[in-house]
Length: 446
Ligand code: PHE
Image 1 (cartoon, helix red, strand yellow):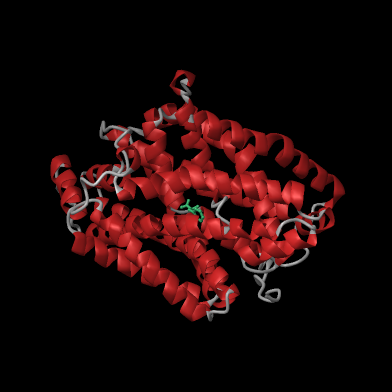
Image 2 (spheres, rainbow, N blue to C red):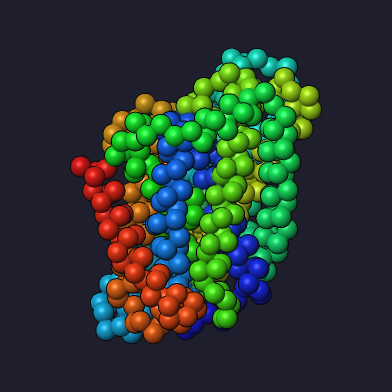
């Protein structure tokens, strides 16, 4: 397959696209609830350390491979491996990435669908005046309704695949240019609103006063997986975007900008969410329902609550939309590499993800007592193992490929940070990121 000629139209477009991929459920839904479950500040610190030591250098490795290969992930890896005189089997890493995003997208689309339902319900005043138990029961009833869940899952997936089918420059860029600034604006308004609440100071204390006794090997695994997940690293998804990165743009600069924007969203969302949680005296360790249960309860009593809540779910929907587009891209790029037209590829991917997504939908009703590995439902399994095991594993292989296998000149050129910048990046990947992933993975899994 020949190199792609498609490019993001500007540096800004590239940063927006990668930020759009990074900021999503991970920041707004997953970050608050796993921080809540893992004890707050100590987890937060660990996650930020992993973002800096692992997420960022591996993100650069991943984008660099895509940029040097300028093809779909599988094809880029195969091409660069052969160029380096190494085994063409490296291309299977691209397929592993596609499998990972496939699993992730199947639950991602279902949870994102919840935000469509909740947004409509919130704006139409459906939560106003309801008590905590009523809202909790409403959420349970929603989960137990496969038809309503399927409808939202379908809607969300169609939204995603339509943009993917339109292609990068036409579809993604226009959407990102519009959505990302709006997202930040909404988030700042919400966090500003949170600052007026009684729970604001307790939320800050809880988020920023670490208790290191809470750290166990499993907490390390959760924090590492989350760092990969939130930055969208480890599944060759950013590799697919790197293929369209313009020449003459320093990669580390772009990656740092993305990581800062990503962590900022998580912190702003965390502050907004925990301020309402503490104002209402609720439990931060509520689990995956945190955003969907506690926030409607919290906003139900507040002046203008219906509007703020609706706005929040709109924000969540916009953020997940740009991420799911990125999740779908490596699969579509791979199928394109096998000769399919972009539209047909988008249709095939959409249909397959939709079908597996149905199993996630049913995990809350018909299949709720079917337990797979480790007492998890199908939903539990695909929302845990791919982010916490597959992404770090994929990231590890990506890092090894970029720092040890790829021809040095290619890597140097694709990083575009000068010889010293390149040496620094490579030393960090070789001697910090790679050993760290191995140690955390091994200690967590045994
Ligand atoms: N980063 C996205 C989020 O935080 C999820 C994602 C993971 C996207 C892996 C692409 C690849 O929601």
